[in-house]
Amino acid sequence: MDNRLISRSFGTHDGAFHADEITACALLLLCNLIDRDKIVRTRDRELLDQCEFVCDVGGIYDRDIKRFDHHQKEYKGTLSSAGMILKYLFEENFLEKKLYDYINRSLVIGVDAIDNGLNTLKLGHCSFSSVITNFVPPEYGLEEEILTEAFFEALDFCYGHIKRLIDRFVYTSSCKDAVQESMKKGTEYLMFDKALPWMDNFFELEGENHPALFVVMPAGNYWKLRGIPPSYDQKMKVRKPLPKEWAGLLEGELAEKCKIPGAIFCHKGRFISIWKTKEDALKALDLVMKGKKYV
Image (tube, rainbow, N blue to C red; front, side, top):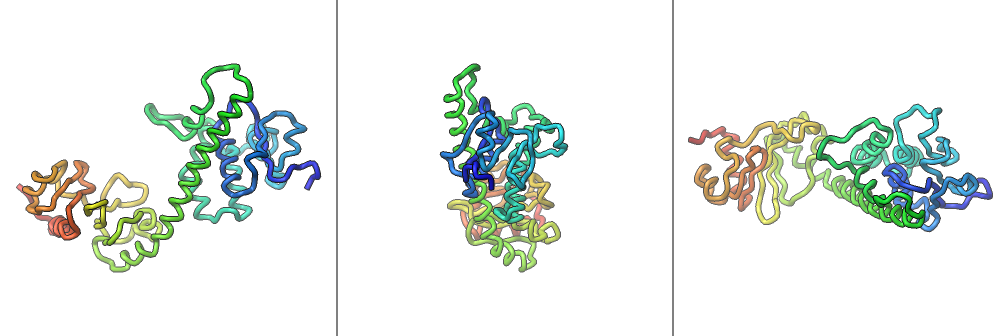
């Protein structure tokens, strides 16, 4: 290593900031590869040359020397500094493949696409990149100290967001065995005695080929009967909808229609219903599976 390099330091450009270098920096902090007090914002080449990691500035993409810029004409790829750093962390075994894929799908692909102009926002949709950009003060011509303070506010927000993503991934992964055990029963529904994240695990375990049509599980103080989507990419659809006669009904109206006293609610989209007890939810499931008609 060059003796001039400051170990665990990070360099990026000054001025206004964007989601890609903020995300790249947060990922390195989460993997404990840089120190917060060694983050430098500058375009001074001499100062950048002293940084162990340099992102989104400098005109070089070379993972071997930890330079991650995507603006130079020589780079023909679709990654921003966020995607470059995520790829580096995977290749250097700081992230396992499944976690790499999860963070990429959940966040970084979108950051890369927006930063490189490959994706435009739909009206009314606020992207993660837009949220980070909103940390930049609206006034022009501000002193660098103010912009740097805003940079660190955005960085802290991003760090927390990615940490929560990772926590969610770890917890969801810990529930995989429970989902697999329920799937092994081969029934037309999955049964869980406690609330847990089932959908990601279900489809990762080849749930697309599983016969289950519904999930029965606790929902707060109640129980829910929820339809299973045909595939992971069709989450808003279900293999078998709840009866159209139940759609949008609440409590007494739903109870009168289905003759189950513990009825609470059926969504008008007919993909989920809520019941007072486990027994009520199973009674509702039985009615649905028998295809009883309501008039």
